[in-house]
Length: 228
Figure 1: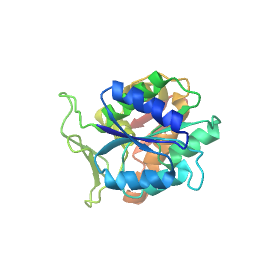
Figure 2: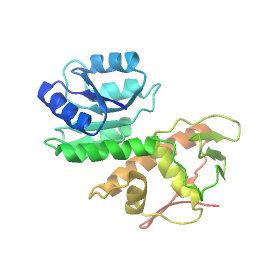
Figure 3: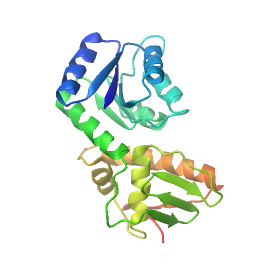
Figure 4: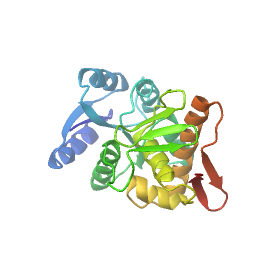
């Protein structure tokens, strides 16, 4: 798999490229936001992007906005901006995960593996191929979500993971920690905030496509569920 590494610091690009090669990936380097967009065009088989936020001319946030117009490629932000609002902005804009500099390269590799797993079309054998929840039809094989009118809702791999988890267990309430551990497949002290942002983004997409239908319910103080 090709992994695009975007950072104006060449030493960081080289460091991550070494670790990616050791993991069996093929790194593709870019040193600016514009170069990153060009590489995505010339390498359509790139499976994931590792992206810095603070870059001259075009910031990482602007790169995410442009990429998300027509692509759901997993995006892992690696940034020196460590505030909660910085992380939330990155996630709301369309990033799938966020790591703060200085980072442990092994942690970045673990996040890469986790995001790639979520982007693959793995389906548990005990789950049905098609789930119907309210106004939605969820195809577990193709990772497609459509409304009753046939309109497809474009979701990121993590958003699809959250929706399919809840839909596969109707009426069961999952806490934010449960969702994070099952969908992200890792533990984190910021899991509640991360899940909250992704659920909010997922809800917005569903409501926009269905005319305001509330598919994901909040059980205050407990977590989230989808009703049968």
